[in-house]
Length: 104
Image 1 (cartoon, rainbow, N blue to C red):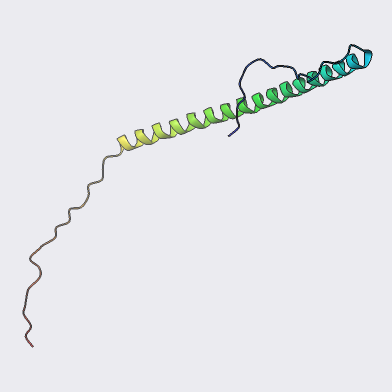
Image 2: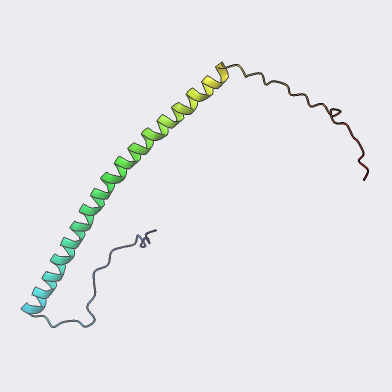
């Protein structure tokens, strides 16, 4: 089973040390923001694909549930229409055996 993360706020990655304000540090910050944006877009696309698959599976399951319920209903109706079969009575006679003694 997949472990579900806490559904809190998505926090950006934090650098351990603040950088000096320069063009290079701003370029690095821009790169980090763009890569995070791409990652989030990919994750959203994956979630959309997963949603489509799950929706299809739900509709398939609902169709199977409906079919199974209809089969059960038809079987119940068929059982109620057929009269129960009379079982033949079996009589076992208990006095059919004779006892005798054997001497040696």
